[in-house]
Image 1 (cartoon, rainbow, N blue to C red):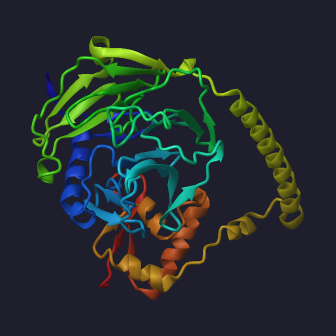
Image 2 (image 1 turned 180 degrees about the vertical axis):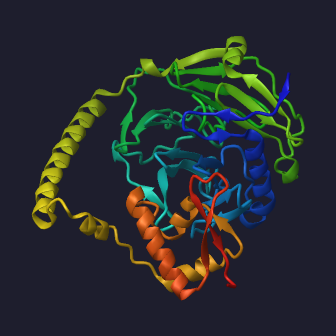
Image 3 (image 1 turned 60 degrees about the vertical axis):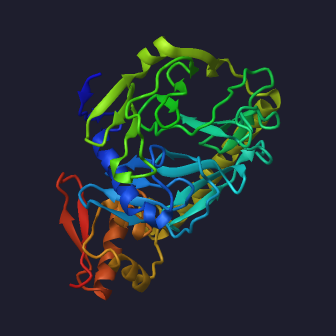
Length: 412
C-alpha cells in the first residue's frame, strides 16, 4: 500500500491532518496519562474550532490542546470516576457529550454533556422512554440521532444478554428516547467502542489492529467483517510505550493508520466492504414501536404549543419594556457574575501559555453567549481582570489573523 502524508479538507472548513492529531494523542499519553492513569486512544478526542479536546477513557478529565500554544490546558473541575470506560465521546452542535460506559462491574446508559460555564459534566435528562435497567454495550451517532444497542453480556462476551438485546434511538434535538419495534432485526455481537468518526460518514468498530464492523451512514447499512485481514503495525505498543504508538482514524472514505514515523497506510472503506463486508442490518428498515410513535407526536405537539406561547409572551413583554431599541437591555440580560480574584488566580496558573478565543471564553464562562455579546463581555472581563492583575492577559494577533489569541503573563 502507498505511504502518504495527507491533509484532508471537510465541509466544516477545517483542515484535518491525521499526522498532527496522532502527534497530539501521543503527546497526551506522555503528559496526561501519568496524571489520569488512563491511556488516550483513537476514540478519546474531539476536534472543535482550532482546538483538540482530549478526554482520557474512563475519566471525566477534559483537556484542550492548541497547536499555536503546543500545550494542554485542563478545563474541568472533575475527579477520576472510573465508571465510563468504553463510553462514546462525540460532538453535537458545538457541545461535547459522552454516552454510556462500563465500570464498577456494570454498564450504564447515562448521557452527560460538558458545561463550559460550570466546567463540569452535567447529566442530560432523557425524555420519553426511560432507559432504567438498559445497559448498552455500544452506541453511535448519525446526524441528530444517537443509536443505542445492548448486544452482549459484558462478563460473557460470547453470549448475547437477552435482557439487554434491545435497540433505542435518542433524538439529540429533543433528548426524547424511543425503542425500536420488536420485529426489527437486531444488531448483534458488537464488543468494542468505535474509532473517532467525526469527519466521516462511516463508523468503524474494531480491536487495536482490525475492523470488526462498519456502518455506512450514507446508505444506513451495517456490515460485518467476514474475512478481512488485520492491519499494519503488528506490535501495537500504545499501552506500553505511549510515544511510539500507532493511531488509527476514520477520515472521509478512508481507514488511516498513522505509524510512529509519521507515515500513513490507508484503506478505502468502500472497497473493503465490497471485498470483505457482509450486510447484517439496514437502518432504513427499522420501525419505531407504535407506542413510541404516539408518544413522540404528543411530545412534539406539546413542545410546539409551548414554544409559540412563550414566544408571544416574550415578544409583548420585550416590546412594552424596551421598544425596539433595547439592545442594551438585552445585553444586560447576558450579564455574568464572575469572581475576578478567583478567575485571575486560575488564569495566572497558565503562565506563559497562549490561549485561543475559545479557550479564554471557556475560562471566562462566556462561551455560551451569542458571538456579538460574547466579544463585548470578553473585553469587559479581561479589562477587569487586568485592573486587578496588571498585564495578566495580553491580546495578540493569531498567525492565521482570523481571530486573536491571548498570552498569559503572570509576572508582568
